[in-house]
Length: 190
Ligand code: IMP
Ligand code: MG
Image 1 (cartoon, rainbow, N blue to C red):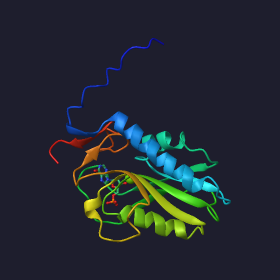
Image 2 (image 1 turned 45 degrees about the horizontal axis):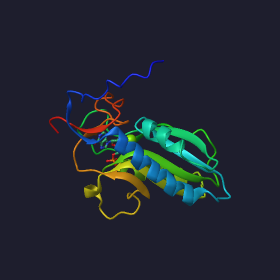
Image 3 (image 1 turned 45 degrees about the vertical axis):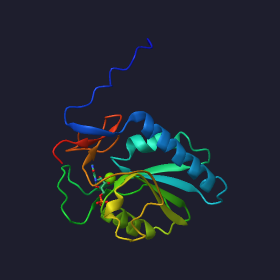
Image 4 (image 1 turned 90 degrees about the vertical axis):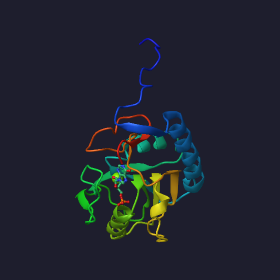
């Protein structure tokens, strides 16, 4: 294949502005990976990175390639937004549960974004029943303004803090689209 320059530099017409470009995202994820390498390198119990589909995909793929300890990966599907920008305050739905036995595992939940924290709280409650050794949360984005001082909600690690705007790209969707953008931007009109 020829080494031609990427033509992906133009911004999608639904994007108001780019918040984190691709390079910044990759740098941020690498820094997070270094922290996780320090934390998990000498653990005796098995470690599992548990991605919350579908938004976790680009983040998780980028993150795990920098990790230097043995780990398993698994996924669960949880839906909370029903695609659009308007949040309905109803219980997030568990659509697909984890396949692995999680007892005595260190779990690291991989989320795309934490806003109200309702989704992550529901997931943690569900996972605690599986008697893991520990449960931690790594989120790509944290909308800190929503933090209501509930330690169950604050992620143990996050890459970026973001304002209370509707974000898309690098896994984040608007009506199931725009997940493939290699940057994170603010959706127009929100
Ligand atoms: P929470 O339950 O309010 O913390 O919302 C978490 C879930 O809502 C995330 O896992 C996303 O799927 C979705 N979400 C929250 N904010 C955004 C956003 O700005 N863009 C796209 N999805 C979002
Ligand atoms: Mg999500």
